[in-house]
Every structure is written in C-alpha cells, then in structure tokens.
Length: 245
Image (cartoon, rainbow, N blue to C red):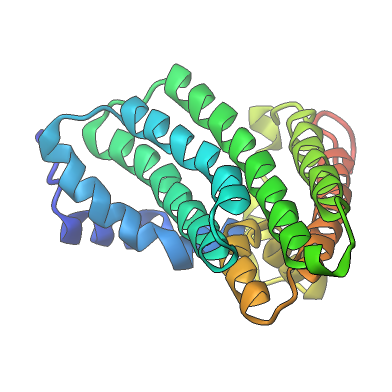
C-alpha cells in the first residue's frame, strides 16, 4: 500500500491519530511546529531524502545558535538565535514525520535524534546566557548570565536522565493511561503545561528580548529547569513499575 504524502493527508492523519495525545503531552510542539513540519514532510517525501538526513541537517542549525548569539550585532543576534531555534524545532518534528510517512523508522535514527536534541538544548540555553551577557555588558556586569544558563542546561539534561531512569512498565501495568486521559485537576493540568512548555522557549526568548528582559529569561529557564527536575523525579518514582501504588 503506497502512502499518500500530500500535506492535506498528513495533516488529516495527524489530527485523527496524534493531535490530542501530543497536545496533552507536548502542547507547544503541537501548536507551534507540527503544522509547518508536516508541510516540510510533504515536500521532502518526493525527494527520497532519508529521515536520518533531516536529523543530521538539524545539527548545524543547533551549532549555529551560540555563534549567532555571540557574533552577530545585538539585534540580529537575538533574531538569528530565535529563528535558528524555531528552525531546529521544525526539523526535529519533520524527521519523525518523514519516518512515519515513508515507513523508514529505525532505532538508530531515533537514538541519533535523541543525541542531537539533547545537544540542542544545551546550545540553546547557552545562547540565551550569551545574549543576556551581551545585553548587560554596558553595565559592567561581566560574564555572569552564561554560566547560569549553562547550569540551567545541565539541569535540563539531568531531568531527562531522571525520566529515563524509570524502567518500562510491564504489560500488566498498562492500565493507568485511561486515568491520565481524564481532565484531572489543577496538578495534572499544571504538570502537562510544564512538561510541554519547552517547545515555546524560543518564542519566550523573542518576547523577553523585545521587553529588554534577557537576564530575566535566564532566570526563567533556570527555574523551569529546576521544576523540570522536580517533575521528572516525581513522575519517575511514583507508582514504580512492579510495586504497589
């Protein structure tokens, strides 16, 4: 059966099969990047390019972020960093979408995607710190915000390690999802909002720059990373697989 790679078909399938679940778990990606990524996938399918090639294409985009933040004139540095971060998010969505559309998924490709994605967060957070240091350089603040942003990046990666520490649930343990699918209370909604916020950080960076509050953006990502660690530890160790609730 030959897949239909047109944009309308891809968008219809996404809305039917994945939109609700992604909106609950990764709302920023669902709202901001999924639509342009499907448009890109529809144009990449006829070229025969592999999903791995798209994943690798995102690497120089990520590497360019701190260079743009450091080397471009201040106004263009912010704009360049934001555009590069948005481009990375779209490519990060497109490689998986291309793999599904062409049936060329692989565990090696998924692992490569993970490695590059984690590197991107470190580079993006560092870029925020560089931009903040450049903004306040006239005040003689010095090299302060970049190390703080690096600490936030480390915490971000640590949160992912904490989540990966949880073993896969056995088949008999697969009952909880219906409970999580319910609307839930404030805690559940706050947890989902927090977990899915990372994709919106490039937009928040642009808003912070327009408001002249880049140092506040560094503080924000640091607090967000701390909350991410707390959420990762809490969700990883509550109801541990194989143990009683």
